[in-house]
Length: 68
Image (cartoon, helix red, strand yellow):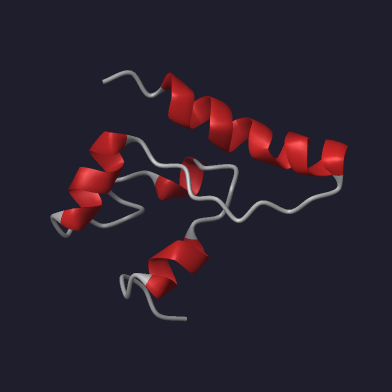
């Protein structure tokens, strides 16, 4: 599975938000990240969530994966 769509949407969401003055609360993950996460993988050590442009901590909190 090619991760280019996920990367494109993740990288350009902040640009689009700035251009249109709208904040989009969207989560962008590659299917492999989603599957690994659902199997209990660490979101940072295995899934690489720290490389995303759009923060995923809100999603991880709502899903009960991390606590802040």
